[in-house]
Image (tube, rainbow, N blue to C red; front, side):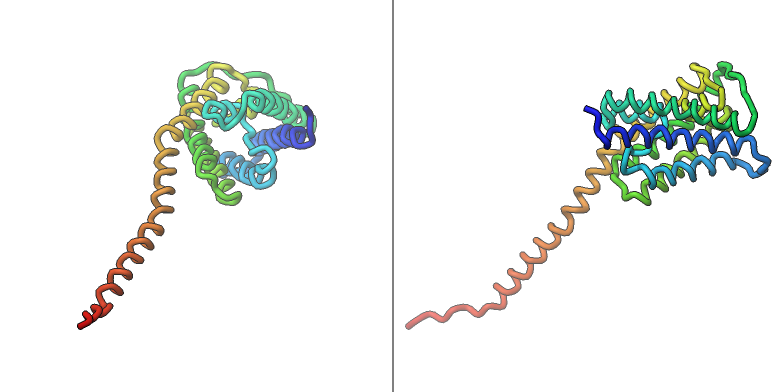
Length: 243
C-alpha cells in the first residue's frame, strides 16, 4: 500500500542523492585549488542531509551502502530495491541538471583498472564502517551526522589516492564514470565488507560494554546497601537476658 510516509522516504533518497551528486560535479569543475576540497564538500553535504532527512529515510543516498545495510538486515529487500532505484535516478537527474546549467556534456569515460577497484573498495569500506557505527550505536542525530559525514570525507580521501574517489555508484553515474568493474563493484564490495566487519567485530562488543556499564551502578548500589546493613547490625547492642 502506498502511503505518504513511503513516498516521503523515496523522495528524500532521490533528492538527497541528486544534491550530493550535483555538489560533487559542481566542486569538481570549480577553480578552488584546495586539496581534498571535494571530499570535504561531499562530507558536509551528507552531514546536512543526515540532519535534514535522516529521520525520514535514514539518508542512505548510496546504492552500495544500501546493499551493505541489507546484508545485516538493517534494510528490507523491498527498501533495498526501491532505494537503489531512486538513488540511481537521483544521479541521472543530477547529471542532466548540471549539463543543462553548465553546458558541459561528458561521455562515459570509465575504464576498468585494478588499482581503481582496490581504491574504491578500501575507501568505501572505511565509509561503511562509519555508517555501521552510527547505525549500531544508535547515536543521536547530531553525532550521527558528524560520524557519517566525516566517514565519507575520510573514505573519499583514501579512495582518491588511486581513483576518482566516488565510492558511490550513483555519483559515479552522475560523473559519467559508470564502469561495473571499478566504480560499481568496488563500492559494493567495500560496503558489504565494511558493514559486516563492524557487525562481526565491534557491534557485539559495544553492546556488551553498554550492558556492563548499565549493570555497574546497580551492583555498586547493592554492595553499598549490604555494607551499610552490616555496619548497623554491628553497632546494634546485644539484647539483655532476662533473669
